[in-house]
Amino acid sequence: MTKTITDVICPFCGTLCDDLEVVVSDDGKKLLEVYNACVIGTEKFLHSQSKDRVTRPRLHQPDGTWKEISYDEAAEYTAQMLAKAKKPLMYGWSSTNCEAQSVGNEIAEISRACCDNTAAVCHGTTLIAVQDIGLPTCTLGEVKNRADRIIFWGCNPAHAHPRHMSRYSIFPRGFFTGKGQMSRKMIVVDPRVTDTAKMADVHLQIEQGRDYELLNALRVALNNEWLPDSVAGIPKEKIREAAEMMKSGRFGIIFFGMGVTQSLSKNHNIDEAIALTVHLNEFTKYSIMPMRGHYNVTGSGEVFAWQFGFPYSIDLSRGFARYNPGDTSSIDLLVRGEIDAMFTIGSDPGAHFPISAVKPIANMPSVCIDPHQTPTSGVSKLHVPVSFNGVETGGNCYRMDNVPIDCRKVVEPPEGMLSDEQFLIKVRDRLKQLKGAA
Amino acid sequence: MAAINLNLISGRSIQQGVAIEGGKEKPAYRTAAGIIELDPSDLKRLGAWKNTNVKVTSPHGSVIVKAMETSQGPHPGIGFIPMGPWANSIVDPNTYSTGMPTFKGTPVTVEVAINEPVLLGIELVQKQCGVK
Image (tube, rainbow over all chains, first blue to last red):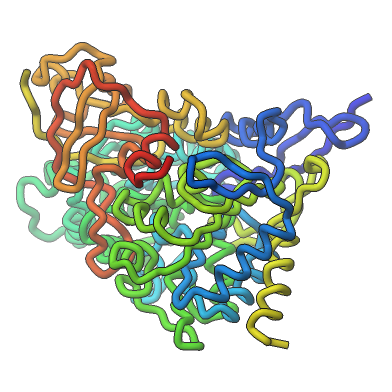
């Protein structure tokens, strides 16, 4: 007999879909089928069952082979590495739960580490802009029930957040949006004709990197002031049409992604996007929301902020938290060669950092805690596989609109495997002994 | 052979998302992210057939990827490599004091490299880092 577990949370992207159904074997050890998830979420659940999965910690040998060790030995290596390092970097946290993040932050405090999460390569600049001028935002439930103007700026949810449009933003019938997509207008700003842009009422095919100019031009158009013939490659008539469409709604929302945060101008683009949102509130109700990538990157920022006062790029090397992106941020620290030990968890800087920031990792003591084999585990000295959070372990996570949701455990992990939190507790306790902390 | 200059951007694709969850050591990851999506007019300027291996060079490095005709175009003048180690071999690491590298908007040169192989993801990073 099999059993079906309902209302399962998907641990892939920041949409944190909470309506999955998972069929497991009667003994709860085997995951058989996944319903309602997108193709990426389904793959994540099913891959946890793969036969070639690494189930024990392993040390990288000089000849390229791996030597299997116990979790206790792995915790000893990690604690010794952090105890000896003058300036370790503890990076990642976005694919694990808030409970593990909290233990990790204790370790960071004891070892006086630099701490960073994957906002470093996704919405870090958003956080700078939010600290500058604030964020008029809302929840995804409000978007579903109220929003009749949806703007996707520099993001492609059809690929990156596959169920975002069907659950919250375009297709669902909400309380005040009873006709689903028929009651909504959709504007997409992207230099490519993405699969999201193809569905839009208006697609502004912007010249890459000209987001600030176009945001500013829209503000000018809102006030019916003079515009040049074209801005960022968009004719002024089309800008005026988009501005009219934006201000004629009852409730609008701007979702923005990497196109805005990773192009030149960075946080200034987002400053201007938030200013546009504030400006639109002179005409109607508007909100803005970053499209967060990892399912718990928002939670990592929250836990950092509770415990250290800053959401990312934190340097504890002086015994108190300092925050100065560009100086205390992981890519800058790595490129400048200021780090002497690397601790990675729940992320893959090896694949997602520029290569000049990856090379230093290969030349220092390094630990990679990840259920998968990744480019980071490939260049790290120690790889510690752990159970999949959200599949084999429960725990708290934050959706992209800052709503906390508890993930569910649906199957047992392979025998003898630890969760992130259990492994981190071992490291913390050993580190306390080494440092003589009570 | 002609070499063309493009503006490179990187980002998610759904195939890349499936591949990272399916295992980054597998060839499917290379199939999904070891590619550059080009506008049909840029492929013509390059004088290359679809699915030809090309060398993409920027001031920050070079990498071999497979040139594909884009499915999310037209976007003449723009090359798109899905996020992953292939794109990150050549993107601009400069953060301009924000902590965020400039993943979008790197000037690159693309030329045909028909006999050079596209490496697997982990293999590519290990090779560049000098790790076995």
